[in-house]
Length: 261
Picture (cartoon, rainbow, N blue to C red):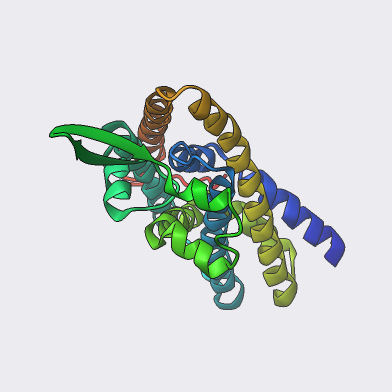
């Protein structure tokens, strides 16, 4: 294959890779709590960056050191993704994540504050980030925007992207490396593949965010239903993956069967 074909193929496969069910479900549990479209897109981009870093490093080891990933290790990485989905689902269903965000004052999330008026307690709900984003005059630099978004808010999708990159599904990026003889071209391919995953996930999180944001503005009580729905889906799919990987594919058996998808 010539270089142009490799680059186009890498970009398209990267975009396609972002649509894997485990990826979409994981970011949905995060995006379901966002109330601004820009933040939803940023979550997708940060997830893609974490995913790309892992794939690039894995690819470099394979290309330059001829590392072979053992089947059991590959299954273990995929099992970590299943556990991640279960944890994200539980956090959404229990509301623990929401309380963490509130306590850390992470922008972009709904915050509740208790005040006393005339001796009677009242709860007020605020959306801090939207005021800043809807008035771009207040914040213009990227550093200030990241500062407003919060380190925890950025680290979470980044870590999830890294874990997904370790999973066997990242082998999609590595399968074609066997047909690329030059190491430099192979590394370029991995970078382009990563760009595709970033673009694809930004598009996915934006599409997911649109109906969530619109519905939450029209119907305030729907927030809870969205969180519960995303949590249930993540929990069920994570449990299904854990069963498939641990029992069917034999992670905990004598002879594991790893078929990277």
